[in-house]
Length: 330
Ligand SMILES: Nc1ncnc2c1ncn2[C@@H]1O[C@H](COP(=O)(O)OP(=O)(O)OP(=O)(O)O)[C@@H](O)[C@H]1O
Ligand SMILES: O=P(O)(O)OC[C@H]1O[C@](O)(CO)[C@@H](O)[C@@H]1O
Image (cartoon, rainbow, N blue to C red; front, side, top):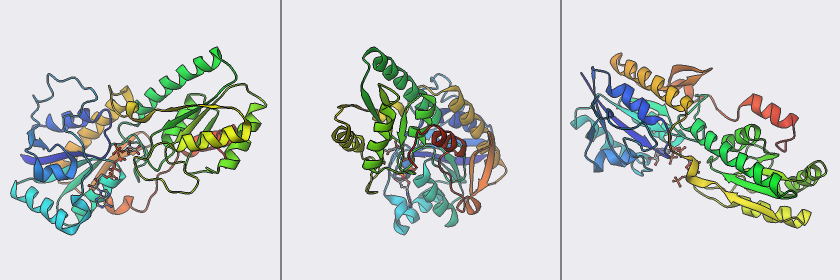
């Protein structure tokens, strides 16, 4: 029987309970979750995630194990505390579910001697080496729903410019994918030009063809690169400059946190469950120091020392289409 610790870390992501259920339902694994990310390992009592734990719970957006952002893994002193605690509690390994920051910490801990496995979970879908991260699809579905509503109001009251700011951290994935699928007219993403003058020029051009416009702006679309995680409001700055350039008032919405959890979509629940099954297999096989992620729709293990060299950005095909239809400025 393997004794296993699990944390979720960084922003929450819908579907992760399915991963946890698949691990806890393996009869060779004794699973414990610590609330609160890395710090929680030291400060919180573990929850015993038995096969029965999830039995009467809905697989909804409330994580069995609460997430958090923590200071401990940034320092050697902090990481040593984590190593000691996990060892003295008799854990064979640590499962970390989170974004790219959590991934860095998991790699460090593994390199220093604690067996770890990493599971990509973030609405940003910006995990190095994995095509997909748990939570992205649910967030996109919610965004699309909001955009459809906006299309309706745009049709009901024509002649307006709408600006929607979305989460995404340093990645434009949410903004770009939702702009394409939700028929947005322009996505402003940090990977491409965020120059206010270029944006205004593009808006003027589009206004020659359409009466109403819907712009999707990534929260990190700062012209001067001064975005910090959690910042919101850049779209208001951009909207002000569009108004100045076009004379048209821009109707603004910041979507923010509404999209970050909730009932998981089929895609999230399905990938999360399959990732959980693979994680359980890795534990049984003593296969540690890996991310269990997605490549070409297949669940795969990626050794930490290989994924560092790859970078995952916007989806190339989406970018190509966005360029073709002038939905990004490049
Ligand atoms: N460079 C790093 N070195 C050590 N630990 C880190 C590092 N970056 C992040 N961490 C650890 O991982 C935690 C989560 O990281 P971060 O806040 O960047 O979120 P994330 O994992 O990228 O998730 P999300 O994409 O949802 O924001 C941090 O609170 C910290 O404990
Ligand atoms: O929840 P917090 O700490 O405010 O962080 C917000 C950040 O988390 C994310 O939702 C996930 O990384 C980002 O899109 C956003 O920038």
